[in-house]
Image 1 (cartoon, rainbow, N blue to C red):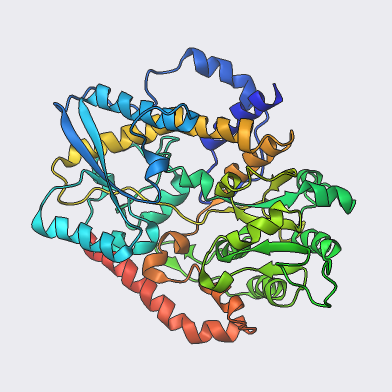
Image 2: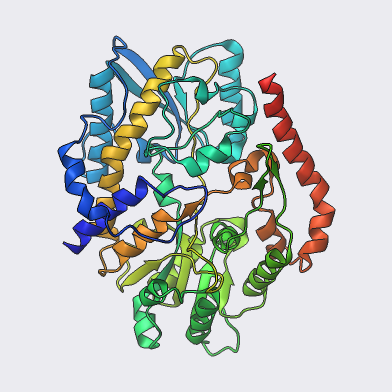
Length: 482
């Protein structure tokens, strides 16, 4: 019953505050009480689309090879998520009289940009919908329709992600959008995993109770990490491969530290533009704290692993062997933890200090959805785009979360509640959404790993370049208005 109520609450949270442009750490305890009424008035479809018959046309979707299994399944396999994906596509195909087909490209920005540009230049019309990664800069090449020009796309609906879409929209133009079709909105949320055995063996405070009492702060994480540090092989040095370490993470999780502490790289201005106003005493203080955490703390291991991985996966064996107390990584890592013998828990990133209002969850990014200027039937593309996100929200997302609650996250009764909080506080910054054009979102953590102690002087030497890139991005959108 506890998990059922938590699951209902999670869906309510997803429809209201998840993916927001800001963050909220509060849960609406009244949500489960209103659920029965919603069930009695449920519409046949989650969207508000009318009747369409596209006459059996193929609907071709270009996707990334590494994400195709999160998006589509060719047949039912008995796996709850696979079956939900297959059934979703079958419903869309029957309802709109189309045949969904997927074309996969490798995760290579050059291949994607050349493919998309080639299709537009030749007007080939090979793709009805494309889903590149946000990191590749495809959205800034003038290849896509303005999604706001399609009346059938209703971005006020809960299956769209306003935290992303609002920050991707500049001067009334939106060339890419993110919604519930992308499970990366859940799987790429960053969290802190902890070893339940080490918490018990070392007689440390419960991370769950610390979160609930708002005492889960950076200082508390570092205090507990120091208590876990142990030179297991007795060589007088601390080695994450042979000793017990307190806190470990890779590049993506490291980048999330600043955002989780409330840093915003870009601010919106009164004229609907953006500027960089982050350099102040608070920013410098947080930078110095993260710098010390990464570079001057034996209990903390930043595992860039020679650039081999951004997720810190080299640390996973140590965590599964209970030689790492805390591991910051993505929710997707639960797939890797299924064979862990000991128990583990999951909590959000800590507050910077007890004066921070809310927990904030960093998401390392996702594929977005766009319609090429060469799409053979743009209106059909927009209709199916809306329908896919709506149906995914209604059936696939609950299936995935159900698996998470009943399988990967079922090691104790607190994990579902923590997952609610993590999903409800996902944050996207304008600079992050537009990283491919500006390049500043990963800059701060890059200075830390490069051991640049004076961030103020480093910013002054870099500022003009970033402001020029921001100006160029904004000017591109202004030109499109004319």
